[in-house]
Amino acid sequence: MIVETVGALAIGLGVAWLALRRLPHRLPDPRLVGPTGAAGGLLGAFVTHTALGGAQPLAVLGGALVLAA
Image (tube, rainbow, N blue to C red; front, top):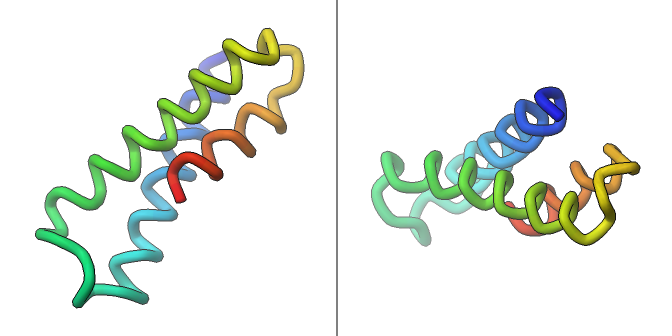
């Protein structure tokens, strides 16, 4: 459970960082993009974990990636 949470945070922050590097002119203040990406990753992991029951950690991280993007 902790590994899924840390993984979801890392995925969310990674997606936010990548978006800041590739599309800086289309995004708001960078101080907002990082926390929003982390929150998106955590929300995606939570929704996927709730839907699947948490038996598939890779699917949970995939859900975090989909919602963070």
